[in-house]
Amino acid sequence: MRQIVLLLMLLFSVSNSFGQKNHFSDLDEALKHPLQVEGLYLGNQTKYSNAKEFPRELANCKNLHKITIGWHKDLNIPKLFQLLGKLPKLDTLEMMALLKELKYLKLELNYLTKISPEIGCLQKLEYLNLTSNKLTQLPPEIGLLKQLKELILNSNDLTQIPASVCDLKRLQKLYIQSNDLEQLPEQIGDLAQLRLLSIGGNAFKSFPESLSKLNLESFHSGGYHSVFPYPVFRISTLKTLGLYETVLDSFPESIENLQNLTKLYLRDLNSFNWSDGLEKLSQLGQLE
Image (tube, rainbow, N blue to C red):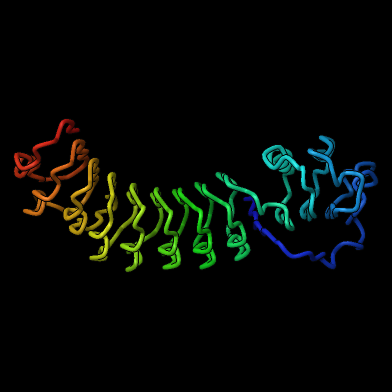
């Protein structure tokens, strides 16, 4: 299985591997021998420095496993990743000073096993989607993404969420479904702008009391017999609540705090007395 390590490097540096046999710094020369190319350095002093795209023929370098890209101010990033996606052996990507203005980054289904600390240099990033990779941890530097509004980490192998995520004061949506999590950071209540939290598909053993400090409007939890998220039932701003395969017999008395709840989704709650307590939800309009 292909494993990709994404390195977002904002300081100029060149790997010592360039200069070795089958490693090229001249793209045109590399394209003359595409199957020989194993490493490629595309600096900022070539005829492609002002190009918006690299030649499509780059996809013919089927043995390319490492590519380093220097500063190219007009490069079309989405098309670059489409092109790189056609390289079956690519496992290392270095990009220097190229993504400073990036606001949207989606890296689904790339078998990523690691996100380097340099991710914290993407100071203008507002959306980050790392769904369906092989991540077991995140670097603390992710907390430096001060403009981030939406973070999607679904379907990885994460065993914990770094406390630094709670420094993302502008974060509005956090998805961490289907991981290997057993707890949330104690400081999660510091996410004052968070409106949606989706954490289903984890085996949570406890929830921090600070969860009740959030101003959530939508919360989804459950799976793998996760414990019941009692602190959520003290969030009066909640409008949508989803509980799936959760250890619970009936609603807690604190359900009366959810006076703004309009949508309630219940699934796979064995022996659950779902009717007891619903009469306290005056605004409830949808029950599934």
